[in-house]
Amino acid sequence: DTGVSQDPRHKITKRGQNVTFRCDPISEHNRLYWYRQTLGQGPEFLTYFQNEAQLEKSRLLSDRFSAERPKGSFSTLEIQRTEQGDSAMYLCASSLDATKQFFGPGTRLTVL
Amino acid sequence: GENVEQHPSTLSVQEGDSAVIKCTYSDSASNYFPWYKQELGKRPQLIIDIRSNVGEKKDQRIAVTLNKTAKHFSLHITETQPEDSAVYFCAASGTGRRALTFGSGTRLQVQP
Figure: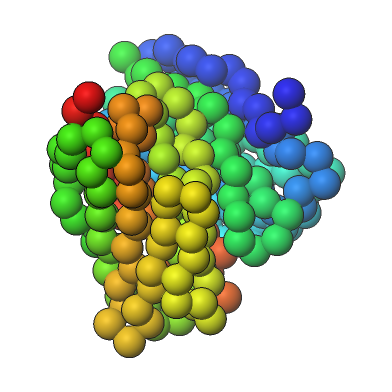
């Protein structure tokens, strides 16, 4: 499968724990995006990388959230001290240019 | 920032009928408008997109129209089929803002 992949697909954690998600973009895509989607809503932008540089961050991305893309390939999204309000589907997307974004299957986070 | 409004929130049509979903955007700097289809439990799938220098684009049974003056764009699906049933999201982005801003979604149900 040459599409965007994400790991894990599901994560259940207790409030206060840290979690980390991984995204592998389509190879040769230099742009990578993280979004969050809650039930019945459209995806909300979190952050954007071009190669290894983090170029945009949403105000949704509190100081508990951090994202990296160290070698311009895969990316990780870490949430520290999780809260119940963090429960959502975390989607990763990648693109070759500034337009067509292709999404991964998402990581569903449940915070108990 | 950008705000995208989408209507209707639900749409039920008979198989073979046409379906139209409308979106408006607020930022006149937006210049790229994709549409995504999301089936239950699946990733958003890019189905068609349009740039601001084009007024209309068609791909088989789906078409998108853009009115830059009025700042609205629409998705048209003709000869609907049961497999068209899904949630459809419109989105917008611009030169200074690579992240997509999504509408709230339209749940389309095609009755056989």
